[in-house]
Length: 363
Ligand SMILES: Cc1ncc(COP(=O)(O)O)c(C=O)c1O
Image (cartoon, rainbow, N blue to C red; front, side, top):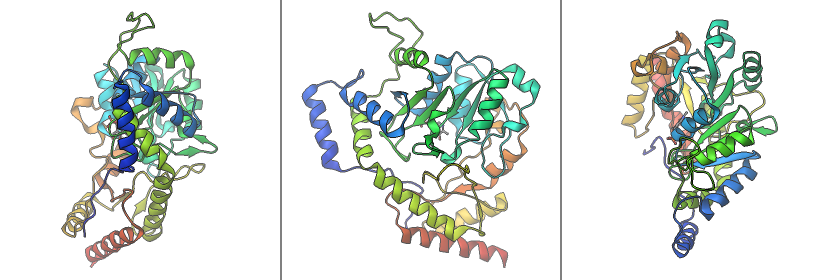
């Protein structure tokens, strides 16, 4: 067997080549070119959002969101995420205050924020973990009561609805990663979706050194521009995205059917729908996780400890906040192979191998 943990989706080569030929003819490679403009428009329409800005990756998307919204001081966030969630806060000289997660959804549990923590913070940074929307209604309500801004690291939440809206419609800003391993990608890339037009316009300048229309640096900016070649890849992937999404959702449903009652599965938002971005499973203990992962790898099946370690246990991120649930889940969670090339038979083979290895451990 040969099942890597992930394989980037490659759209039709001739379609990408045609895009590249047009870029060569125009000789307009970056600085808000026609491909970037077209992708921004198409994503805005596809996702049903309003103020969407493309940037060079999902990490800088987070940094720009904090800067454009003027976030300062402490930020209440989850320790159960990828390094970039916390590292971007530290990079912007903000202080991550870690709040524990819900043991079944793996998302930040807003009911655990104390009055004292809320009083000292300027924002909540939630993560829609593995694409599963946070309890956006509860976070919104809490933020209003405590005058906090809300940012969602929605790196995984492309094509993830809450009711009849995209999860990206919630918060003062939501950020996407369009990295090659993501459900929808532009090789490297990211996007920020703002609630408010003025902040969006400010961020649009910040992406390009803070320059205004007269090339005067009105704000402290950065270079976070997406190139035409990256946007062209995004346009080609978007063209085939419906098939990608449907296929990956079918794969996840098959995984869930075969593994329900065998391992702990993530509980999804009641008004949402799994977007087929990741296939995490929680095992009974860290020792069992190590045994099972090693045995799967021996059979050619890769797994990934994602997310590990819990970010509240990383000295470089300040270790503020006791988060026993996140620490426990981080130690026991692993992602199984999931990519567009994977077949239903592949999922069955992986589940067979996993079930057999788990049963062997019980003997
Ligand atoms: C939750 C989360 N946030 C942020 C990022 C950073 O995105 P990028 O790799 O595009 O910089 C990632 C990337 O995997 C992620 O998983």
